[in-house]
Length: 262
Image (cartoon, rainbow, N blue to C red; front, side):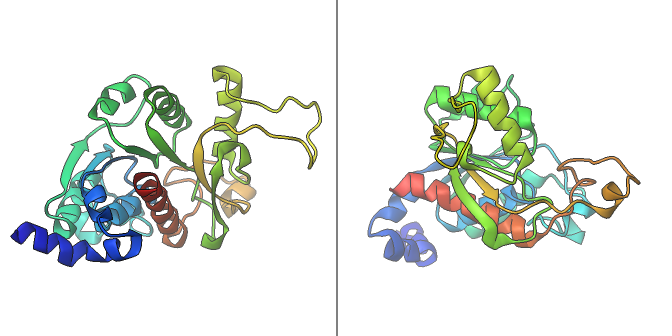
């Protein structure tokens, strides 16, 4: 009874928003998040504050000083700590009855099926590696697990340009364009049949739910001046800001709630 009263006090607002009894649905839900960085850490925070009863976090990075501008657990006092362990402590402070599982690894084709044996209701991809993303897309499709794929937040400035839709619709995102091309060429996903694409061309959906920021990426001056070689989405790559990474993480969490509740 004490536990139930505590849950109602902490998360009762969710019933008032989504409908009576929906908190029970969230408490029974299991969400897996791969990549606990600038997007993933905020996503996990939102899921914990939404009363999700079981969270599985996948990452093997440790907090570094360069993470402080955009990642939730990154503080001067946490540098060097495991990201997933730091988030576990935070989750339990928010939601003491949450079942938190940690996987100290990076996702790849060789392990994703083993991890999905935990049977999450929703898998959220917050990684920044194309091979990892493709592995999750293929595995989730085969296992019939709901999946949300996050595009790039690096190099983006406008959180109001955030979009959600099918992978076939995503624009202004080199990573998602690469995924789209590889999935069509290597894995038989639906492709455009017309030789010339026009505004009237029917582009078939690919069945992959993605988030992207619909604006051109800002290229660092050092790349523009050819002082250094482009480094992609790594810490030494595109610039980044919490004002974009956090909204994308929150949007991914909301997409998961949509799947769980509606």
